[in-house]
Amino acid sequence: MNRLTVAATLVIAAVGVATVAQATSGGGTDPTEARTHTVAGTYVANEAVPALASHDATKVSRSATRPAVLPVSKKHTTLPVSKKHAIEADRQALARYIVLRRAADNAEKFAKRLSSTQWVAPTINFRLTALFGEAGPYWASGYHTGVDFAAAYGTPVVAVGNGTVVQTGWDGPYGNQIRLQLPNGDQVWYNHLSAIGMTVGNPVVKGQELGRVGDTGNAYGYHLHLEYRLAADLSTAIDPLPVLLDHGLSVG
Image (cartoon, rainbow, N blue to C red):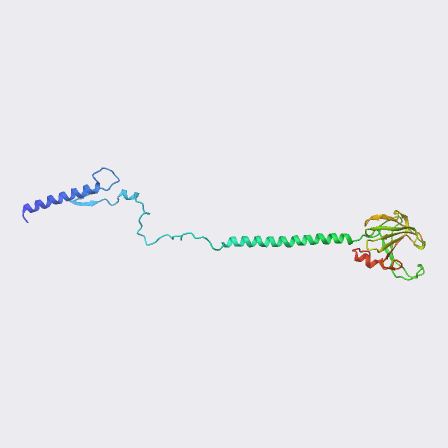
């Protein structure tokens, strides 16, 4: 190669370096843009280019890993599990409420029915001294026709249930007596009273005072002689104790 050829080659190389530097820097002085250096007549680019820091990495990604893409939301055809549980819990709670409400209603009805049939004891602070059917010389019939409630003289005697007074006054061996007729027609006879506080026709409610314990008539010691007579045969006394027990009394 002759000297002319070598000189031409060097000129072309110099022009190429200048052209590349101009194209890379844009001809400006912005420190954030890329810079070039020539080292021993060779083009070298900076290692770090600050301008790349503002690059939006989300626009283009070369990574093989991609975030999960959710499918387009579709209308649910079934309820979520938590919603199903809530509905089932509400249904069970409603069912329990209905059962408890029915039980409460039944209990209230039973209480009312029991209240209407529940009796009270004919006197207080008593002890049973003679039962129905006992034999002995003390009774004109040869046997005891009622139940004796021994209590202190003057202890109140009350109606065992609701009814109407149908007879009061002296009745031979029964002494002072009150006959209480119940709604079903049966009668309760209260005997040997020391005092009578009712007149015929008086309506009474259970627990209402009728008279007082005494020993009038064929009596030995202060006591209430109680008899029970069925509407079908008022002339014959039956054992009052089962009737009292059947109406919720504990007189033993």
